[in-house]
Image (cartoon, rainbow, N blue to C red):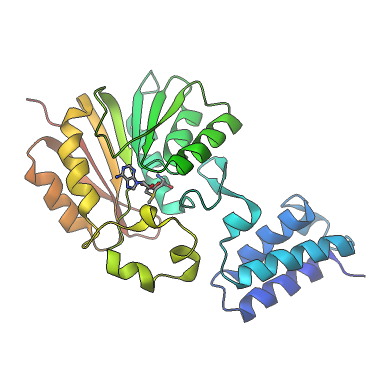
Length: 283
Ligand SMILES: C[S@@+](CC[C@H](N)C(=O)[O-])C[C@H]1O[C@@H](n2cnc3c(N)ncnc32)[C@H](O)[C@@H]1O
């Protein structure tokens, strides 16, 4: 017979031996999903007996993680802000640093009706997190990937947000004529030649078009900042994520257009410069 706590230790050790970066957390998530238990059961009922069939399921999950399949793909979901989102190969797995955008927009915007445009929406993470917090807001998510949009729509439906969150295929804001109170984006920002050097979990599992920001990683920002003045209502605000070390270059692109006021960079919880914010300047 084996217990919950022994099984967790076994899973941690297997992932540690395989060189996985976060063996304790990964083992916990895989265990909770394989055994279909509550997160607290590990603490409140550690000596519960684990059935053979559950161990078999966990072993299958561990084998996949050892081959570097992301935990979110194995269990089919990932927590983002206050939501659990469906995740699979159709879109980038949402990352915790992107929550900086959600935090900033919620803190800086009124609760009254606002319209949000999320460019490169992927799973719909940013847009859905915002609308779930603000019942009076509505929004549009754009992506170039129809597969990502299918997943975003499934996530919207799961959280009863389909009435307020719409999704549309597009090349950034090319066909958008409407103006919005808030524009968000976490575009691809990895320089093309760096992608092959990323961890296997990322380079082989996140969609290439969710990662590739062109030769210098900045190509999407030139397009986004060029389109932005036509997308924002008067006083409208934006928040765009970028990669480590890109802050100065992104700020230079934003400043070069003369259309924006109150430009600033905000940091993520790891103290890395992560998001550029600003507003449409008054004329
Ligand atoms: C880094 S992912 C971000 C996904 C999601 N917003 C998030 O934060 O988890 C970038 C997204 O931009 C989309 N994308 C890439 N090029 C695009 C383009 N030209 N027009 C619209 N979306 C694009 C990708 O398909 C991908 O879903």
